Amino acid sequence: MNNKLYPDSHVELKEFTANNYDKVMNIGTLGLYGSFITNAVANMHIQPDDHILDLGCGSGRNAAIMYRYLNENGFITGLDISQHMEKHFHNKFKNNNQVSFINQRIDVPFDLKKLFDKIFISFVIHGFPHEIRKTIIQNAINHLKPGGIFHILDFAEFDMDKMPRLHRFVFKKIECKYAFDYIKRDWKEILSTYGFNNFSERFYLKKYIRLLNAQKNG
Ligand SMILES: C[S@@+](CC[C@H](N)C(=O)[O-])C[C@H]1O[C@@H](n2cnc3c(N)ncnc32)[C@H](O)[C@@H]1O
Image (cartoon, rainbow, N blue to C red):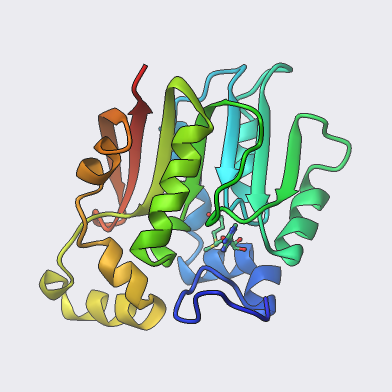
């Protein structure tokens, strides 16, 4: 991606990272990423005929795991802006008519003219200025069925100053100022102002990562 809208953000990926994202994650986590993401997706409690929207879907690695839970009535729609991610996504789902990719920005209002049972966003929302995150949340609530679930897999809320020194060093090295802001916010409180309730959460990786499940009011 050449023209970053948010120059400080790390979620608008450079070409090399986008092309090798899955490998980078595997190496960066010493091979633990596969079991971590499989476990996190299991905790979404996907139903066989769910229609799922994946915001900033990347290479389709997560979609491929979610797809295992679906029957022939289930469907996954992935949105992303990276042409490199799009290529990887299409390679994974060749001849599969239950999974589709749309080149769509998630940080501007959009209308897919469809409501979903679940919306998943994984390691994307932390990377935007807070005002822009509000648009992403509004897009999510607008595209969920009443009672549908918004699943946010991302950093948990924690105090960077209380991290062990090595953890803080790594976090500061790999993350951007928007992530430093993201971890300070009360996400249940924020989401409740948009019409979400019934929160549940699972923590991973020494509680630095969280899957936050938020239900749209019925
Ligand atoms: C850190 S990667 C995470 C990818 C995937 N969700 C995962 O967990 O493997 C961030 C993704 O967000 C996408 N992205 C960044 N800005 C975006 C935007 N404004 N709209 C849609 N996708 C965006 C990037 O292209 C990239 O695929």
